[in-house]
Length: 464
Image (cartoon, rainbow, N blue to C red; front, side):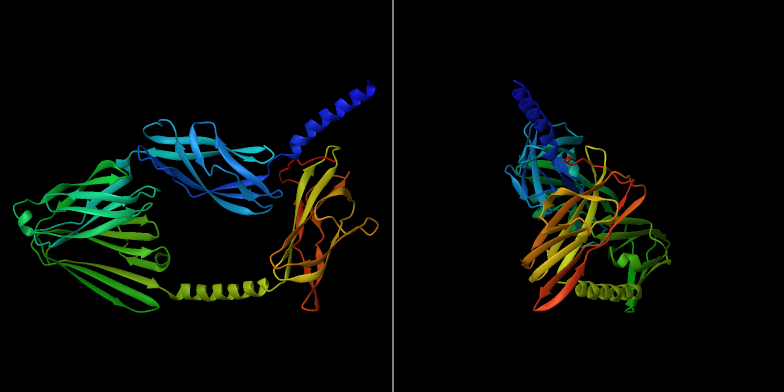
């Protein structure tokens, strides 16, 4: 009977300890922002996760309890230490609110049934709320106009059809429209269509059709008064490029002149303006600068734009130098990476988990990795990853021997050190060294310095 009680106690203790060993240890990082769900479009919400597996190789699956279908529906295998990007698609199976933001709680479960909870927030919109349409100004002498449809959301609509209508044009267009993309078209104009129209603002509509769903978007066409404004552009210089845009009013009414130029996100950093633009808008990788000025009859409005490429040229030279140094670094055949993390021992001792990653960039052989223990600590008898070939407690040394490592092969060396003496402040560990043979020659490699700061966040791992 006493023996049965002891066995039951042992089983109960085992059940209490095992869940801590099955705790999932992954890092989940969401890639991108501003995801949207377009109601009634029957297209899934797509987002990307970068998942880093901090434990041995495992497989993971996604699920939720809120009535959404999720892809991938199967298990995703991620090797130990690997960071994998996963495309996740969710589709609601029930009606969602008409508009606003919605937060979905979902779970990532490992093969041992341990799991983590994650949240994903997306915006709910109707089809018509995703677009802006408009046209360039038109006057009595115009022979063409530029019309556009802009996707204001982070959503890939794919192939769409649009019917543009206004007193000045009537046309059908089919094209693909990606996230936050703008499509523009130059439309020829027939002056007979608007010769009897007065100056002012007119409504244009864009009837959009996507996957059988339709929406109407309204924009504005400005029909301006007759005027004569000539534009002169000058462009000169190479390293210091100068553009001069001159608007001259040769008509008989005060003209509101609008000038728009665009720069990419690189050139804008080295560009100055005189005068400063009235409006700055960013659309993807392009920045639009707008000047709006009233030019009196006989008056001139001049814009000077200077782009100094001398500084980025020096930056490029600096980057080339860095690339050369990095290339030289990558010639190292064997790389050691060392890190340390605090662990909570059941006995209350101060304990640290030391991990060393041995990565072979090229084929090497006869590899001997040596790690030294700092003073006042002892090594725990159980080891994670590769088992050491030799544990010399007297000389406080650990050794691992590998006959060979193939190019790209990585070995993980892990052990726990502990001490009954606490640590305050910074605790430094010696570097790990390796001696190996490559093409008949002996080489050495050394890891980074690993430190532990007493204020860093504690985490639980299995006790001794």
